[in-house]
Length: 259
Image (cartoon, rainbow, N blue to C red):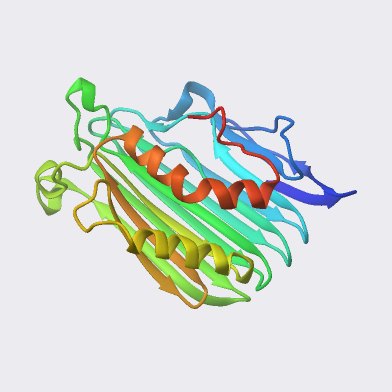
């Protein structure tokens, strides 16, 4: 369980309880937001891991929730992760972990559920890679399922799901030259101008530009999908799109020394 509160002009970690294999690291960051990084013993998921994290960002507080490194799902493991987060009035949550990297034969299921107050703000980056490409394990995992759901003021507005499995056809052939993909969700009235600016930026890109990017503007926010040739290109593109609003929301740049 992770709880963030607003105290004397800053966001602080009020509650941080976890059990093996999950670890929560809360370094002192700049700006007014709390920064928390998810970690685990061994740096990833092994067979049978079923990790659940509950997050509450209290009114007026801000949280940058990330990970120490890519979420590795080791060879032949069958693992699950779930995140249930509530973002109160005037609060901000930026959930931006490193991409999921499944080893050959691995199976991983991730579900992220967000409940946002109408005056809250939310950014979610759900990214994954082809696996250990340098070791010849390109799209060689057994199964990857991810899901993001969002409710604003208890009204469901998004249910985004993805299932990648070779049972539905050869993954390498189906995904072409893309080795890193991401879905970005931006929501909340406080991010309306950000959604408009990013949507306009994407609309100006040539249709054949690399990486491939598509944006869907909704009354409640924005959904962006990116398909890149590798993790480096994906990170650079995502940072280019999000860094200005992240710095503005947190009062500091948590990405400066991350990539």
